[in-house]
Amino acid sequence: MQVSKRQIPQIILLIVLILSAISLVDTTMNYVDFCAALANFQLRVDAVDFVVDGSNLEINIDFTISNPTRYGGFLLGSVYATLYYEGEPHNVTVSPGGPRVGTPYQVVETRWWELPPNEVDVARQVLPYAVISISTSRRVTGDDAKIFMAYLEKQSNQNNIQFRLDTRVFLVTSTFLGTTSLEFPDLYYP
Image 1 (cartoon, helix red, strand yellow):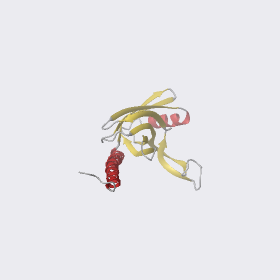
Image 2 (cartoon, rainbow, N blue to C red):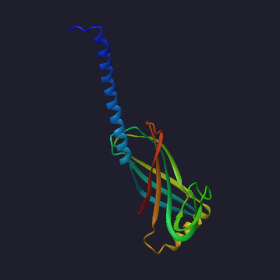
Image 3 (cartoon, rainbow, N blue to C red):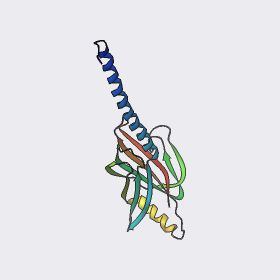
């Protein structure tokens, strides 16, 4: 078969189109896997332990993070956790930008007490179908520790203390998003 000079540009265009289509299929499949991984990413609280040492309190939280998909483009940057416990009603100041920042801010009554948040840097690749165990430890001192220990002493005759754990997992991705965070609010323990 002989190719004429007029057919050469058409053949080159056809080759470029075929290579582009192959490239787009791979990129599209990677993006579909990325979306499935975001939708199925899981975080589980395995244990929350309190260690009381005099007037100090140490909170240890064990997590399991899993990626049950075939996507392997995540880097687990950090895990941020805030532990709340249900106690006596008290007033807190809330606003979109933090305490007394921005307008409007307001004072609300709540039964939930917040212990100081904790962030642990992980910087670890999340491989496909991976399960990663993470432990955090936070030392609580001062008024936060005193209020919590008084609450524990008051509740010592009860079997059930209600805790709420709000977590945020920061993922570094190789997509146009750069860094994204997944929130897992209201994980109750036990």
